[in-house]
Amino acid sequence: MAAGIVDAHHHLWDLGVRDQDWITGAALEPLRRDFLLGDYQPLAAQDGVRASVVVQTVTVDAETPELLALAATSDLIAGVVGWADLTAPDLTDRIAELTARPGGDKLVGLRHQVQSERDPDWLTRADVLHGLVAVARAGLVYDLVITAGQLPAAARAAAAVPDLLFVLDHLGKPAIASGSTQPWAADLRRLAALPNTAGKLSGLVTEADWVNWQHSDLRPYTDAALDAFGPGRLMFGSDWPVCTLAASYGEVLQAARDLTGDVSDTEREAIFAGTATRLYRLRR
Image 1 (cartoon, one colour):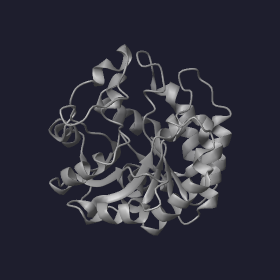
Image 2 (cartoon, helix red, strand yellow):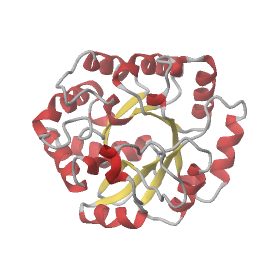
Image 3 (cartoon, one colour):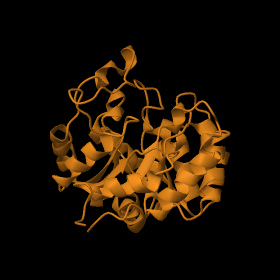
Image 4 (cartoon, one colour):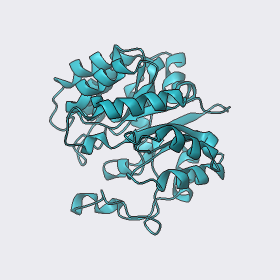
């Protein structure tokens, strides 16, 4: 893959194709419009992003084939993290059908909106673990979109399926706005102690005070993640366009650069390109 930044986490949606039913209330109203590849491309280009991973947003079967088809037409989108029902008895066949579609060679992972599940131990249910084994056998990664309180269950799931790489989106959504670091930091460390885990420096500005956040507000959380995972298991993700609730694309990228300013050049290359390329097996 050519030199440049890999954005390991962003979204795209067209409300004319499908509603995003999670965009509700006045606070999220700025997101209630289309965010298309044509909107993302110039932002990526101006900030030196050469490849990206687009991530699912809704729990419906149709979205992943649509993202794969879009990726098939794009040199920028190097990977797709889609959705499939982990509890489906025919999950292996469903994954095979996805990879056989146009753009299917860019399917790099799956995720589920675990953050919305009422059962705090959803990830460790027998049927879910069976599905996670199928994801591992398919050679895919599993993205964890969870709340901080679900970190212990995520660690148990990762321990139960050691052949599957678990990538923690948004560092598990710590309570940045309140300044609280515990028990999140301890739970993060337990997850990161497992070798089949990695994390994304993504989605942090929207866990902070949207209006008044500063880089210093994020630093305790990025420092904890750097210490727990190390640069070789951390990757940058913009979480665009959700990030625009609190910051522009450029501001998010600059924050990540500043907050990792003390690492070596080699470590910085890992965070901003190498880790995502290696762990998601993005094509060169």
